[in-house]
Length: 265
Image (cartoon, rainbow, N blue to C red; front, side, top):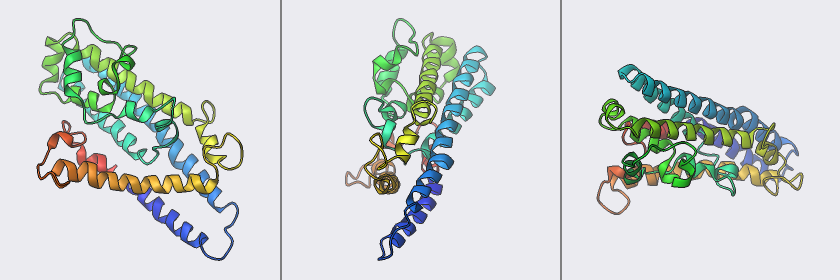
């Protein structure tokens, strides 16, 4: 998140300089968009897909060899994937929110619906990754995997609940599929949203009506993200939103104590 704030300062400086009476260099904004797209956006989404793949693998290892070491490894892989995901948070446009993809809410629907997760764990038969999309956003994504990995006694759950491992494996596999789908939508070789973003104002398939609009979308998202951190992730859990009542259940990533790391990413 903080590196994006640095980018925002650079962008704001550029925006101010371009608002003077001097004409804006025609390719100045486009060069900045190109740099963002190829140096930040695409590599981060690729890293996300890689890290969720590692998480899915470590979940399988945990279930095959349940011990403290494999549990610690799975938790570490969750934190790594989570950090990468939070770095992409300023990209809440395009496949993240737009129909038919709307991948953002499927990857990170929070706060976790514990009753939904516990209900699936209590079902008569195990769930699969192919079934999860039919259960809604509350049954999948980062918060569900966090809840499972940081439940009071995960190793006991593996031994005592025949649905625990199938759900953990299904949730991590599904998460990896979603992250890979998001990367594929941006990848120039597949969905090419990156190309559509860069062609804003230049062709009919451009993501925005102009390169300035694309530029503004990114800068505005940076500002929205900072405000969201202030209100949703700090004020609401701390009871500073007017309610007067702290509510830890509204904190992000509460089970793993990763809330501050989420904001720092």
